[in-house]
Length: 332
Image 1 (spheres, rainbow, N blue to C red):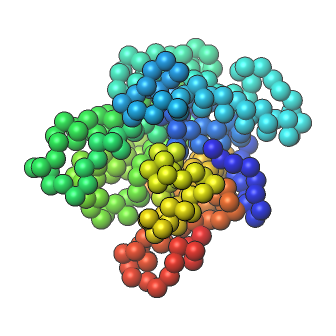
Image 2 (image 1 turned 180 degrees about the vertical axis):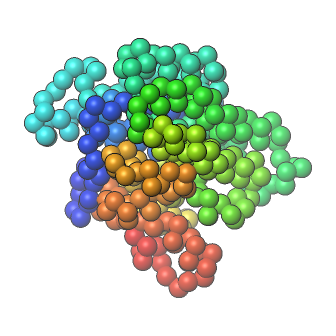
Image 3 (image 1 turned 60 degrees about the vertical axis):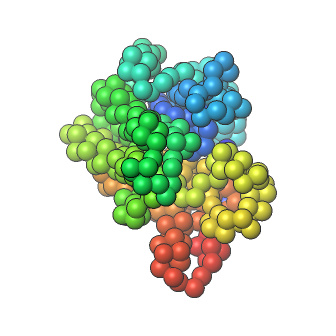
């Protein structure tokens, strides 16, 4: 997902060897990319989701599974070890992916997941809460009295309840050691989300993670932990590429249909941002804040897989909503 180093590319560089991460919701998209990048950095990564080789979630994309994600994590970790001369290692070596099928709406399953991590590793250093799977439920430009109420309430369950349930069971393990990191993945920063998202349930669902991170930052402070919310920009996920009928190699062909897709970023950008956050000894300065992949790319100096540094927030704020005469190319 995160690609190889290309011309002008500055990949993330933080070393996470010895760290244990849980990426909840790692079947595809940003979740998968973040898991792979954490593995590339040397972390042992537990990856969860509902789509496996034997079962497909309501999202309905059987071609992407958590087993595949775990394999990609292990491959990236192994390649990084070989490149650094650290050798291969066994199944539980640094940079290994471990798939655990989990429905994060089921407390018993999440409890069993964290008990397994405790039993096998005795620690948890990084929790990335990327659980979602509700895009198929969104009804844009539909008044609350006209929307499908069942879809709206399901959205709350998938995008809010899952995050609270996961934190409830995972944080007792994370706070055992100072320095733990929680990353709440959402859509839009707290600033950009001041504009209505044209769907009440979606708007609420994607704003709640900002408050979760804000609250967890307060609760984790005495344990030396950090919590942030983080959003990608216009993400070229597998689902989005399929929507436009393009691939990662031909994604610019979609700009004719959707001009703003010119600012789109690959999942590598947010993945590298999470890696740098996790490796930053001074990351507590971010605690409680709403961050974006573009913001972290500027702060830490890394780029997307194509060597560019897309500033999606700046483009939408100044050009799309602000009326500035500029193009997406001016913000890459």
